Structure formats: C-alpha cells, structure tokens
Length: 476
Image (cartoon, rainbow, N blue to C red):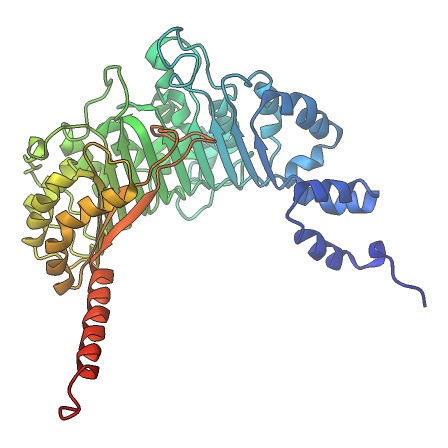
C-alpha cells in the first residue's frame, strides 16, 4: 500500500493541522496549492484582519470579498487603524461590514487632530472617520427597533425575550476612536452614534476623545426605555472624553449588569469643555453609578490636572453612592473620588486600590490618610510621578524607595502589600489615547512591601546562620 497523500486525510485532521499554522504567509501558500486546501485555509486566513492603509482595501480586500463574499463570514476580528497619510480608500470597506455576520471584535481608529500635519496648528484639522459606523449600528438594530414601535410586537423587548439584531448579531467588543464629518469641535460629539449603547450583544465598549453630552436624541427616536436593564454590556471605558453626568445617567439605565467602568475625563486638550466636569455635577454622577451598584466591581477615574494635592480636598458631602460591591478602585491622584471616600469611608468589599500619577512628595500624606482609615484591602498600588524625570531607572527606584521604605513596614504589618511603580523610559512620548504603533507607557515595579519583608527575612536568617557558624569551639 502506497503512502497516503496529505489531501487524502479526513477533513477533521486537515483542519486540526491548518489550525496549528500561525503564519499567514504559510496559510496563503497552502491555499494556493489546490481548491480543497483553499477551502480549508481561508477561514483561518480571514479570521483576523488588520487594515492599516486604504490601498489594502482597494487593491486586496475589495477584489477578494467581491470575488467570494463567503470570506466575509470568516472574519471574527477586524481592526481598522489607518494613518492620516493612508486613509483614502478606507471608505470602500464600509459596505462589506454589513455582511460580516460572525464578527466578534471591531476596532475603528481614525486619525485625530494631534496627528501630523495638524498637531502644531499649521493647518486646520481636515480628517474625519471614513466609516459611518452609526449607520451600520442602526442597520444592525433596525430589524427589531422599528418593529418595537408597532403595537403588535409591544412585548417583544422584555428582558425574558432575547433580541437578535439583523447585522452584527455576534459582536462582543467595540473600540472607537473615529469622529464625525463637519467643522469645529462638534465633530467630537457622540451624537447619533450613541446608538451603539442599544446594541444587545456588545459586552465591552471603549470610546476615545468623544464629547458624551447630556442627551441623545437617537435614544428618544427608538424609545430607549424599552431597553432598560437589558443589554449585555459588562465593560465600559471612556478615555480622554468629556462626559456629562446626566448623559452617563441615561446610558447606565441600559446594561443588565455592568461590572467595570472607567471614567477617563479629558486631560490633554486645549478647547473648552462642552460638559460640566463630573465632580461639579456629582449628584447626577451618584445617581448614574447607583443604577449599577449591585453588579459594579471595578471603578476607574482619571482626569483634571491640578498642581497640588490640597486643591480637591473638598469631598462630595451629600449622600453619595458607596457602590458597596466594589472590589477594585483605580483613581488619578487628585480625583474627587479619593477625597469623597476619605470622607465617607471606602467601599466595604474593596480588595485593591490603585493611585495613578501622584508626585512622590505627596505619597507620605496620601498613605498616612489611608492608613488612618483602617483599610482591609489586600493591595495598595501607587504609580508615582517623579519631578525632574531622572535619566536612569536606578535613580528613580532610589528616590521612590527613599520615600516609601518607612511607610511599607506599617502596611506590611497590616497584611497590605504596598507596591510603588514608576513609568519606564521610552524613546517617544505619547499621550492617551495610544494609537496603533505608539508605545504604551510601562509601569516598572520599584518597591513591594511584601517582597521587601521577604528579602529582609532571608537576610536576617542568613546573618543568624552566619553568626552560629562563626562561634568558638567551646560554644559549639
């Protein structure tokens, strides 16, 4: 009996083999060998697609999808992340998005006003998002949103009846950094694109550089109250956004059980804020968060540069939602949340607290106030800002250790691991949101109270053993 040819193996075995090929070039070469291998390989070739240039759409993807539309159903992950100098042709991809029925993860990242050639104000920002995702999501929801206005289907949106959208029926995560057409700062308005929050299968949404206003006409258009506590959203991230607390209050009526929220307010912008800062409209913010208090376990807040620790020492003194099920807090060092929790006490189930960007000079004050609260957390993480930015990482570690060594012993005795980090050096400095190809700052551990105690115990044990061995013969 002759040797069996590869193509004679059962399809199940062949699929298992193809699944182990992690090199796209090799998969493409395999697909070119014969029609059978092409059929088996293409779902893996198109499973994850990264689009960096409009020319890729015009010259490769558009002809490929037109020739064989079934390839669209193979796409699970799609990232559209183009630069200002290669955006022409990106819009040709939009019609195909409506037919990616197995899409799970979608990223749309368009150039922003901080990119060349607009960064230094030499030219007006002229770029805009090339994909109308608002229209895409409206089409996704149209199969039931429009029907929901009909009396004959008045009960179809109850929590007991899952909603299945016509398009993007399997979408789980969405990341957006793409803005509208038009002129001026209105291009940053979330506006009609807020329809994404009505999508029933999305479990994670991340928005960067948007103005999230106080009201959303698109919600009224589709009678959003019928979606109360019905969407699958678990993770909601705002990064470098202007956020109206009243608008957030409306948005948070929709998820059935939100678990994580990151409130990243604008820190790196030069134009006026069209919304009240969250700390100013704290009553609405408290009402907003309280709607998800039973399920929320992680809260993050960054934003608002203030030069001194004492500027925001005034807490929110009215009845503030304590979010009693919170397990993790991550806060910028002068966030009003810190001083509010100083006043009201920390959430009772809190396990970890992380403080971001605090100048080393203020660390003793912060840790002293936290220590007097008799915290029962497991870990306190601090990301320090070191004035003057020393050239060497060794010098940064030396500065941090000099500040926290006396403090760490106190926390270790209370079974709290105090960990202090600095930001590692990078050849290029970027500001959030971090776009494709930009280096993300790295947190480098400079001190851990538990590791320090462990090293001290080892050192003391070593010294003790050395002393025993160096005793006189009579003593031994």
